[in-house]
Structure formats: C-alpha cells, structure tokens
Amino acid sequence: MEFFKIKRDIPFMRYGRITTTISLLTFILAVLALSVRGLNLGLDFTGGVQIEVSYDKPADTQAIREIIESQGIAESSVQNFGSTRDVLIRLPLNPDVSSAKLSDQIFAALKSSDPGVELRRVEFVGPQVGKDLFESGALALLLVAAGIMIYLAMRFEWRFAVAAIIANMHDIVIILGMFAFFQWEFTLSVLAAVLAILGYSVNESVVVFDRVRENFRKMRKATVPEVIDNAITATMSRTIITHSMTQLMVLAMFFFGGEALHNFALALTIGIVFGIYSSVLVASPIVLWLGVSRKDLMPVVKEGVTDDRP
Image (cartoon, helix red, strand yellow):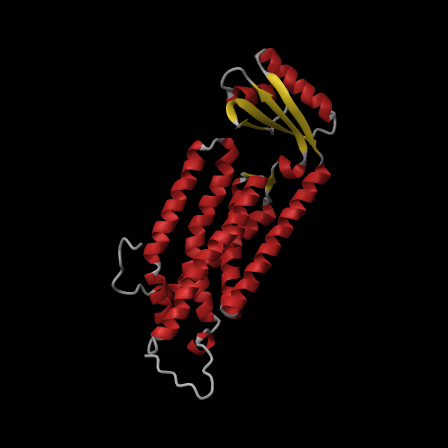
C-alpha cells in the first residue's frame, strides 16, 4: 500500500555528517545520564514485597498510595491488576522490618481505611532474585544483538551488520539514557519494551537495506549516495504508514493502559521515534562511511555466463 509517492529523491546522505553528529551528541548525553544518575531500578530488580488486594468496588489507587506513605514508605508501586477492583502493591525491602511484618502492617492500614478490602496473596522477591533477573535481562539483550549481527552479515554483508547494530545500540542507549535522566522506573516491562525495540528497529533497517541492494542491481550509473537516497525515499510511504499505525496503538496503551503499561508504552514510544531516525539517518550514513560499493552486493558472475541485465 502506498498512499503517496515522492517524485524526487530526498538527498538524505547530503546531511549525513550533520545527522551523525547529532546522534553522536545524543548518544554521549545518554551515556553520561546512565553514568551519573544510573537507572531507577524497580522492585522487580531490587527485590521487595508484592501484595495483591481486592476491593468490593473500584479501587482508588491514589488514596492507597497516600495510606502507604502514611506508614513511612515513600517508594512504592500501586497499580490496578486485572480489573479496577484488584490492586497490586509493590514495596521496597526494609532492613529494619521483616517482609511478613511489613505486609501485615500495610494490609492492616488498608483494612482500617476500607473494611471491604481482601488480601489475595503476598509474595517476597529477594535482592538476589532481582539481581539474577537483571543479569538475565542484560544477557538476553547481548544475545539478541549478537543474533541480529549474524543474521545481517549472512543476509547482506558485514558493513550492513555493523551499521545496523550501531543504529540499534544507539536506540537502546538513548531509551536507557532517558530513563536514567528523568529517573523513570525501570521495570521488567520496560526491559521487554527495549528487547521489542531491538527487533522493531532492525526490521526497519532491513527494509531500507533490501531496497539499497535492489537499487545497486538496477541503478547501474548512479553513485552510492544516490542509490541510498533513492532507497530511503522509496520506502518513506511505507515507513510513515507503518510507524503511524504502531504509534497509534502504543499511545492507546500510554494514555489508557494504566500504570502497569505506562512505562512500557513510554519506552516503546521513544524507541519507535529513534528507530525511524536511526534506520534512515544513522545506519545508512554509516554504511556509506564504511565504503559499501556496487560490487559488494552484486551476484557473482559465473565463468562463461553473459550478464545481459540492463
């Protein structure tokens, strides 16, 4: 489907140095934010107490937060779980109070405020479990990145693999940097969004790279920048439609998904925006800078076979 067609190629590669410089500065700022402020890890990673309660009417999560804060617990997570009557509460570990006593204290406070509340379950997540989850998540991130590089190196050639992985890491570091700078809570759902963005971003790069390879075989007299500009311009309609529809769904989760999906949708939004930018204005200039040429992507001509293509 193509809603519109751009007649003249947009000279993206002419601005390659400018966009690469902007990306480099943004990347450095993100790394500084991660180094100085660090991620605000959620209870999934730091450990804590998880309490699930149910009300006989729609729960007021803001009132529940105020009750918990009145018990001297400043950092907690309160969100609807399954329905508006069910609430999931996450509390950080307190070295001075046992987890069992802490959960009893909070439930007693909720019960005194609303006798209709029922305790469904209490779970304890130790700091070692949280550490293991964090290490497993980091390992998953590295394995996905390595798999993407191998896939692209086999499908195209090493220059495209290097360019795509730099562009993808650019997106991931910026997402993490923004979470560090604004101290948004980094939870397992955010990690899932980061992994999803890796796949989403590489798909966009593959679409452009496929068109670049196709153009090298069709545009025999064009220069490499002209080939890449034509490839990006030709995929613009598809890019705009695909990302607009995806972003529409993500915005629905952002505004109406509640606290459980808020940071997940936020990470996806940042990733989608920078995924478009990096696949067009980061990956492609890097491919050009690495010296890709027509002969790198042309099929090998067998001896005795005449190449009669135009």
